[in-house]
Amino acid sequence: MLRYKGNICPSIQKVLEKTKKTAEGWISTWHSDDDFSIFGVTNGVETYAVNLLQKTCACRKWDLTGIPCCHVIACIWDKREAPEDYVSSCYRKSTTLATYSHIILPTNGPQLWPLLEPEPIKPPYMRRSIGRPKKNRNKRNDEPRNPNIVPRTLPTVQCTVYRIGTQ
Image (cartoon, rainbow, N blue to C red):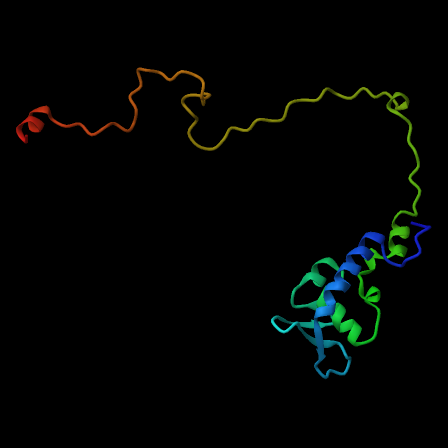
């Protein structure tokens, strides 16, 4: 990263370059605010509201990623500024270098750790669950079922005398 010449991380710069190409089809209109920050952006079909001061766009892509979307880039070009200035600070080269500037010192391996005689690890305390305890255990699908237990849902029973009499 020290040899990299740009101000923004290389992968974010690639995303920004692709977004610049899609921003060419958008037309921005300034909405007469004092800060020159509120714009409406349209491509003839869709329209989005952009606020450069609050760093928001109606599509919410800029809000979520911190990378200006194509609508924002069209507004930035209308102000005659660089889109790289509006990228979130977390993607800057200086932030990355500051994050990784601290030295992590090496540690000794486990063979050099001090030996301790701790008490043995005990199993966790088992609490009795609330409610009536289960009568039987849950059986796996491949275990045979007990043939002496009658199923809860029985077929409808019809009287043979009644059935014969209706024919």
